[in-house]
Length: 298
Image (tube, rainbow, N blue to C red; front, side, top):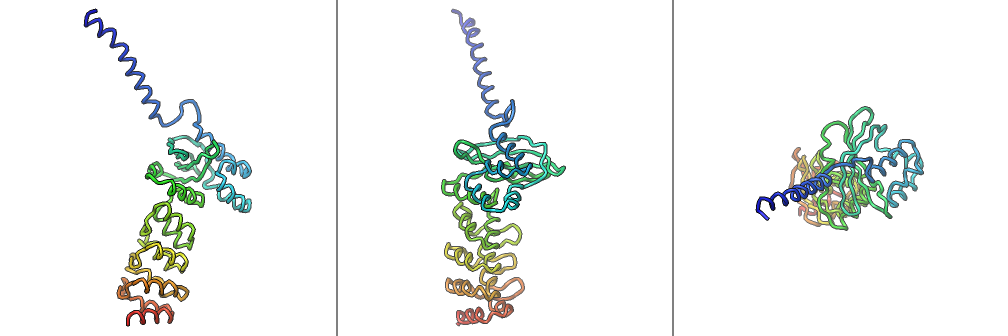
């Protein structure tokens, strides 16, 4: 057989293989189903319709068992409010989805009260069905952050993230850790640390850490926990105030003041206004806190 004839015989087969590979690649990278809703989209659409109709009995069948138990412990109006993240929602559409083992993210589009919206739906496979764990929406432009992939996590960190999502944190972050400390939510603070968030995370507004927030908001149980976990006791916020300086003007925070001083909290740092911890204790009319500082200065 001549070389030219061999080439003619081989080329059609090569072309077919290339075409087949191209089709496979196109199918793998296609963001959505061609002939209708994907499994995730179908589940979320049914859930959203039940929520919109106020059918709590049906809606809770689309959430994981642990979240269902929390909802069932609420009053009917509270449970409906917890499920109704946004309303009214119309023109629900598929954008993309991705999977990570038994977890998945569904990105959808919708019209929300006449605004273009993008939603990030976290889903969890439970007993063979995909259940809605949490959802977060952005209205208007700037929704790209919703499409960011989660960083790699251990199984223990993933378990903590799921619990946070069930508690109402659809995209847990360091900001939320600081916020939960500010609210005195010790269980949430524990979960954020178990999920791998840094104990020194700072909020986006004032730049304070979780320990500073717990100290300034009067939550000694949270502050003491964070100290035991190794939080920086001399960290400063945007006013150059330390956890000690935030705690001393609250007479109910004496135990925290004692522990901070025992751990070596600096007493000489001045706030942006030029006040020391001792000055602030006097300003707050907390003689016991002032006494502790004076004793430490001797």
